[in-house]
Length: 107
Length: 446
Image (cartoon, rainbow over all chains, first blue to last red; front, side, top):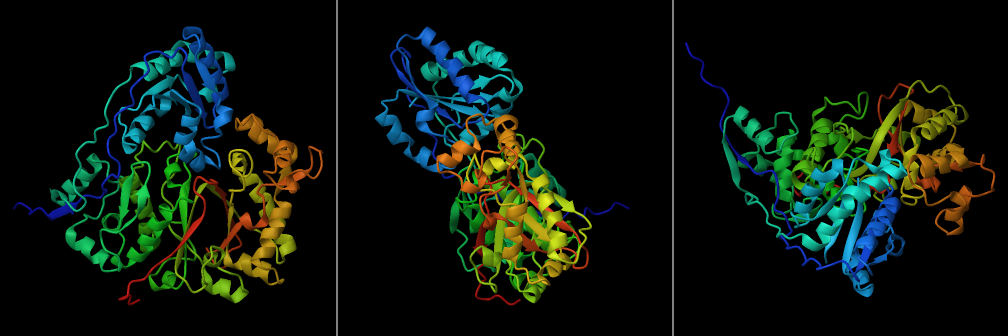
């Protein structure tokens, strides 16, 4: 005698919820870094100070005239004021005439 | 603006997953080989020059791409039809389950849950990072069904998601590497109306309300906030969800202490949830003594031992956001209160006595926790911490773990007749305590 399956039948709903963000395109990239202003954003952990110093040395060697806005100017992006710092970022980048941003550390 | 994000090797999947929620699935990242924390200065510099610099240049000069989301179902779509095993398998394959079987979320089940809220199913309580998804009443009901909750738990689930969406809590940090887990403290008449355990085994799974509501929290973090293991959840170790800790309000009332709900700004008769993330905890077994003078030194010592790197949330990584939690069994609370001590007296004592030498405080952060840019004197002179941290320049002076007595949280629960306590180490502003009122529907019958 074969047993009838006792597994039920269910029509189940999606447990997630719609995403509230639209896909964005990346900004146009720079032709060269020479003469450009690059802002450093740091979350003040995992030796970012050493990492940014090494990156500065490397990029300055390859691209004459490249300028860096030091991470200390922007404040801790993962500290107690992070929400305000991130909210102010577009305005600050404009004031600093920034051409590009390097952000770390994702660790 | 062109950007390059510096990401270490173990976090590339996280970067990929997070960028989807930001609407930039092709966000350029530059690899930092290994992890900087395990590299000497020379090794790190060598890796940055050899690998990372070239990727930064490519990110800023040569990256392109358009964010496009994968098509997803609509909010109320039926996504699968079949038997119990097939449903379970389908949810596992889509990463919608925690690995245990779920209660199939059918329309009929969800409608039962919706009967226990006066809000519309489409109401949005907030938008949750990292996935940037809407926290809707509908999605709360669906995940509540899945978790094995009963429909009447719905008002609690709604309050929990309101708390999760509160910016002060910081849900976006829920996948951080220390792997802290949220503890839910429940207060009010609803504790007994719905049969929550608040006695022996209060932190153990096995009681349907405590367990299923705790499971709901983790499922909602997964399915709506978007914390998927090996992706947006980077807990180095992590742990399973915590069951709900309901307070013993009968004892609190008898000894004249306020419940946690009152400390969070509500009335003693209110039904409330209070959430916070804790990186770990430890039991203090067999606390001996019949007076506060005998009992309190044991608790203060345990708190000082239980908190180490977490003090970065007191000074340095954040300021004044560390809120250690002590659970007292009722018999201990009764013994302390019998000498006339209030809960505030307990907090003041702990603030005065749960202390460590200043040199150790500084060493733990500056050297062991990789925060090279401060010391206590500088922080005090900059006005960022109170004078209690800088009463002298003696490196052996004792300094507190937190900035004020009120930052201690004390709850009363667990075995009424056993002299144990429990200390939770808090995750600071990355899971700061938030309390919410539980709104009961007009037809509440319990």
